[in-house]
Image 1 (cartoon, rainbow, N blue to C red):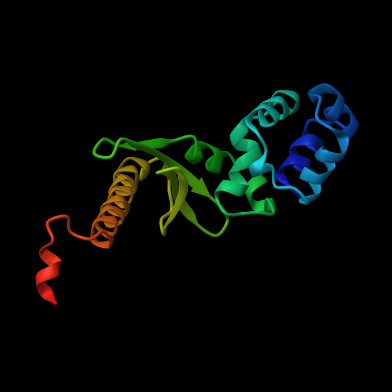
Image 2: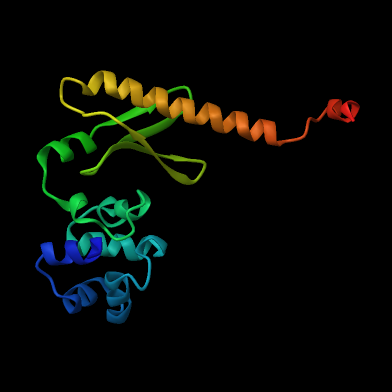
Amino acid sequence: MTALKKLREAAGLTRREVSEQSGINLRSLQDYEQGHKSIARANGELLFKLSLVLGCTLEDLLTPYLAGDLHGSDSFFQENARKEWIENRSFRSEQYHLSGRWFVTEKETSIIFVCWGSVVRLPLPVWVTEKTLPWLSEAAVMRMERYMKDLTFKEKSDQPAETGEWDDWG
């Protein structure tokens, strides 16, 4: 079951009602719900209208897609106060001016952030609690910064030297 269908059913609305209230074609709505079309590729206006009609956030509609769960697993949508509490906590790398947040499933805890236009999900084998969150947030920032350093190093090493110094090695 897709996130859109779960959110629509949770709102107690039929497809036709969502279609009429949002102005989205009924057939398109059906295609998004059945997974024939990816809601992650929908335009912002459509997503905004759906979020208003369903009483949810854009993240509620998109997080399963952005985090790699293309089918919207049941575990993601379980009402779990601990999970919600954790996922509402964010952290920031001042060095790279990046913000991230926790993403929790039954199987793992990860950090999720956007880097150069792409969503990055990095697993962290930890159990987050209210007591451990402060130091785990620091660990998450260090993990995010390590990822950025590795990415920056890889990008620099993939580019030819501008001075021509590599020409002398042949």
